[in-house]
Each structure stands twice: as structure tokens, then as C-alpha cells.
Image 1 (tube, one colour):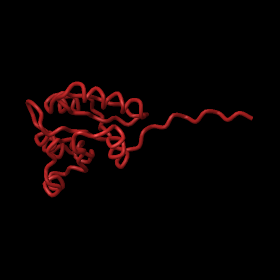
Image 2 (tube, rainbow, N blue to C red; image 1 turned 90 degrees about the vertical axis):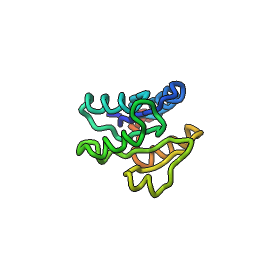
Image 3 (cartoon, one colour; image 1 turned 180 degrees about the vertical axis):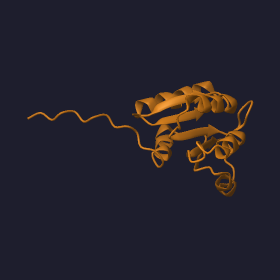
Length: 132
């Protein structure tokens, strides 16, 4: 089964691009336009995602509120959170909040995948049978 990554980003084009790249790279991607939607999807799915990609500046519930909600939930507490932000916060405040890594915007898809694969590996498709 492919690992599931939640992508919480209010810019539709960016969220869709990230989800498409993740799907091509061997992950399941679940997109949400804001923190409230992400949290409701997390609680409804009943399964634990392998990773959360999270923008900080979001409508409704911002990224910090999502981090706080996840860290307060025993089922979600251990999910690695990678913050995507044009204005990355200080590393010390990130660690204090329980954030695993930060990805400064703008970033390339290669940079995104490099950071993700530090925490979760994609599902590899079965190797093609060798010809004899």
C-alpha cells in the first residue's frame, strides 16, 4: 500500500501540482485548502497519514492551529509535519512545536521530494521480470 501524505495548501494550483507529483512518485496524496478541512479529513479517514505537508498561512485554521490539534491527538501526535512557508519561522520555534522540517517557498519538486523521503519512502512498483 502506498503511504498517504496530506497536503494542506490554500493555493489551489500549488496544492494540485504537489498532489500530482506525489502520486507520480509512489505516494497517495490527500489535498486540503485549509486547516479546518485537513483536520476533518484526518479525523474522518480513521487512518494515520505517513506525513503532513502544511502551509502556515491558511484561512479558517492556520498551520499552527493544525500543528497544535495534531500534537494533542494521540493518534496523530507522531505524524511528521513538514511546514511549507514563504516566511519560515525560526528553527527553535519549529522544534518546540513538534515540526519535523521546513521547506521554504518557492521550492522545486525535487526539493520537496528530497525532504519528504527523509521521513517516508514511496511504494516502489514491483520490478519488471528480467528477460532470459
